Length: 193
Image (tube, rainbow, N blue to C red; front, side, top):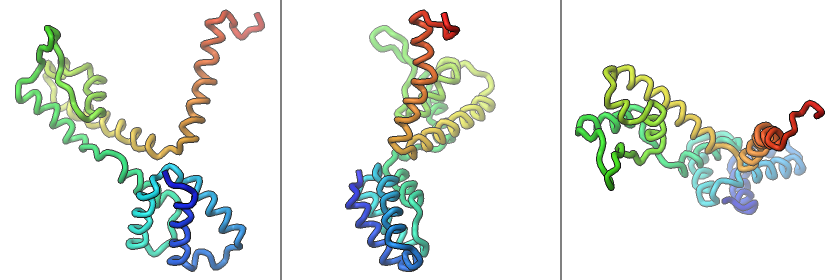
């Protein structure tokens, strides 16, 4: 992950190239903004941050806000997923090859997919065996693509979350769900009993 020094090195290059950015700012304002960039870009690998900053310099005439560096960095470091239609194609390829199931150690198993989103959508649609039995593949394709796109968007949004936001979400979920459940299990009903 990018160290504060690596972010500062990128910052210094950006300030030199986009000299207009610092003209009307006080040294304190620049220092505060640098600190914010260091916090917001800390989860980006240093070498990736440098490469993305160079790409930004090549393609934009404007000083980048943190998202203009973090989003391309995340896109670069996240696995490239197949499109929803390609994923549906991998499912129907199994149908077309007649690979409805196979036996492994005497147990009937459905085929598996390397793409976890594909696997999750198939599971959510009732499983591979149910899809094989379907008589309305047109509707199944539409629902599959819709669900796949939603899960892919959710995965992308999750990748963009800062680590401290993930931690906060976990803490809040624990407070809202686990704490009341633990209280209920321990016999407290929250009604002053």
